[in-house]
Structure formats: C-alpha cells, structure tokens
Image (cartoon, rainbow, N blue to C red; front, side, top):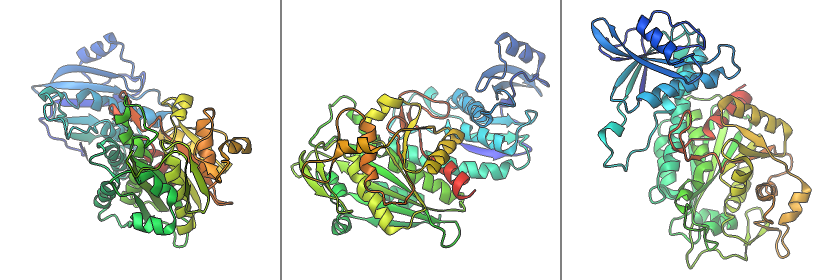
Length: 486
C-alpha cells in the first residue's frame, strides 16, 4: 500500500474517509450521513467505523468515518493505530483502489497522524504468494491512500514510522514463509537482499567456522538436517564512535520437528515460526538501519533446522558449548536454549555490549502462563527490565516480568554434566531462562524475552491479519528510541 501526503488528491476517487474523536460533531457532512451515523450508534470510539453514500460534486461518493476515541486518552497512539487499521480492514478487498483520507479537524499531532498511518499500513500486509485460486472479491484492491489535512511535521514522523512498518513487514514475511523456502542459508540470503544499501555490516559463520569455535550446542541441534546451520550478525553503527553497542540475539530454528524427541504431528506445521525471535531481530535491525537510528546496535541470529536423522542428536548426549560448559541433552525438543547459549556467548566474546536482549519462541509453558497477551520477560537487571516494560507499553508489544532465582537454578543441575537442558515439568519457562543466564557474563545487563505466544495469531488483531504478527520489532525499535537514542 502506498501512502501519499498531499494537499490536492485526485478528484475522481470515490472512497472518501475522515477521522473523528469520540463525541465530536460530524460537521460538514451531508445531513443524511449525520443522521445515519446517529442511527447506527456511531460515537467515535477507537476503531469504530461508519459508512454511507452521498452525492458530492455530481458524483456518488463512498464516505467512511473512523473513530479515534477520547482525545485525552492515555492510549491515544494505540487508538490512532486502531482507527487507521479499521479503515484498511474494511476496504482492503472492497474493490476500491484508492482512498482520500482527511486528517484535518480532529486535532491530531504529527505523531498521532503517523501512528494512524502506521496502523493503516500494517493492517494491509498479507501473504498471498501461493494462493493461485483466490477469488477476485478476496484479493486486495486498495493500493493508494491520499492523505490530506495532515498536521505540520507529519512527513518526518511518517518517514520514521514507515521504516518501522518495513521492518515489521519483513519479519512477517520471514515468519510466514514455509520451511522449504526459509531455512538457515535462505534466511541469510533474504537478509542480505533486504539490507542492500543500508550501510550495515553483515557477518556470517557457517558450520566449519562454528565448529572451530567450539559451538557444540548450536551445531548439535542442526546436525540431523541437510540444511547447514548459520550464525548471522548484522551491525548498525549509527551512534557515537566508541559507544558500546546494544546487542539483540534471536533464536532462529527455521523448522522444529523436535528432533529425536519428535513432536506429535497435529500442529507441527506451525513450527515454521520457531524462528520468530530471529525474525524479530532481523526486522528490528532493518527498521533501525532504514531510519538511520542514532544508535550502535547489533543483531545476532542463530539459525538451525531441527530434524530427526540418523545423524541427529540423541536424548542423553552431552555437548560442549563455546563457553566450555557441558550440557546433558535430555530432550532434543528443548533445542532453542542450545542455539541461544552459543549465540549469546559468541556475541559477548565478539562485542563489548552495553546490554543484551534475547528473543525466542522458547517454551510452550509460556503460552500456558501468559496466553497470547504478553511476552514473558526475565532479566538480571531491574533498570533494563523497566525500560523494556515501558517500551512494550508504548509500542503495544507488551511484556510481563517473570522471576529468576537460585532455587530454580538447582532444577537444571545435571548428574553427569554442568547443566541439563530441561528441568521438571513445573516452572518450564523459568528453568529455560535460568539455563540461558548461566551463559551471561557477570556485570552484563541481560533480558530474555520468551515470545512463544506472540509471533503467530490464530485470529486477526487490530493491526494484523491472522498469521504472523511481527511481534518484537516495534518493541525493540521503541526500546532503542527511548533508551539508546534518548
């Protein structure tokens, strides 16, 4: 979808839209439309929509009014997004190809207007590449939105949000593609293509390099697959010279069968999105590089495919990590922490990080705990935890802090190695976080985000269609805005 800020939109566009605050009088509209809106109980609640038809300048126009909610609401940004997204949801496959959107008269700030346009664009994202028999009335038709009445400063604000939208869309594409299309090497190739011309530095390690570095845990997960495992690092140097970078680390299991500890067949197809953490890191890095963020940020992604092969890792195997710690692998389906522990250690050895945040679709137990409303957060630093929580509230990618503690740590002590990769059934998400914490160096602020319930949705949301949500991109971008760029 193309969004154009203009003072003079084409005159022949039939679909005309405007936004109003809750309780705001519908001034300047055909009396029949005003009466119709009242009859349908339209009040301007956030995301509420009214549609009617009116004769204007000798032509019949399709009129849409979207509600912004209360003007003083603490959720003004979110409400603006909902208003924009409601328009897209209604008209994306309506047969209309263009819309004129009037933002004047609602008292929007430039940031409010940009948020509205962000919701408009994010809700338009779809993945129809493999749908060869999609009925004509189900195909997206709305391609252009001409925005009038935008407040001063909207162009600059929208440029920033458009970069964020690009990152979210990239993540959604990576997460949505099937595992025969996105696997470790093709994930790397997709990133190289997406980041062309952005000025980032890209580092890729193959299995030979990782084996030489002693990454036995990461290599072990992928040894049953014909797809070679990869470690991908994307570095954006937009901050002050010499300033320590913020490092994001993502779990990238491009397909997870569970390995020898095979998952049950129903629902296994969903495991194409087990690389959602790496996808979020890649999308966030694209957003930051596209908008030329004034920050030094590095994204590290451990990319593997977990398959049951004659060469696959067995339950009971002991692997040696890059840190030198040994792990007894009791369950090959607890593989994400094995990927992350080596990626986290490599990142700390390679870069002098100011802080590290990892993202992973790590445990089903997190979905049991928090459902699909919050990502789980574990942190060794209260300040970092508070900063991430604040960024989550602002961006809409919400987090809920979970506990860490030495008593939980005891649950993953192994009788024959330093650690076992699973604890008992209880506190499964916590023991997974405790496992990762053993690979964080003293004095390094670190947070682990278990986003298993957030990267994929079985129903549409305000700014996404059913499927990939792009969760994590907005969170990380907002964190950089608030904390690193200040």
